[in-house]
Image (cartoon, rainbow, N blue to C red; front, side, top):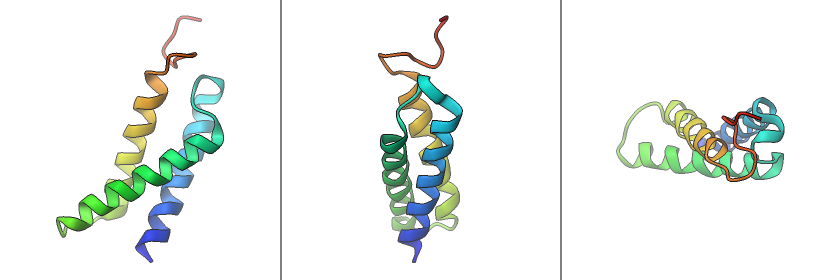
Length: 82
């Protein structure tokens, strides 16, 4: 059950990342896939250490990964002067 929750959380954050970054970020489908994968990785890491709050840490992991990818893109980075 946690698996599907993390997938949903990562997908929603990926979609929100696409909506906020627009043309300057990664396209929608890759953003959702990256969000889902990073949420799963963050959740698995937290669960492997028997910590509480896997969803919280998965959301933070997903946000940081997508922000990093969108910020350091070669084509149209978010923080450019144009």
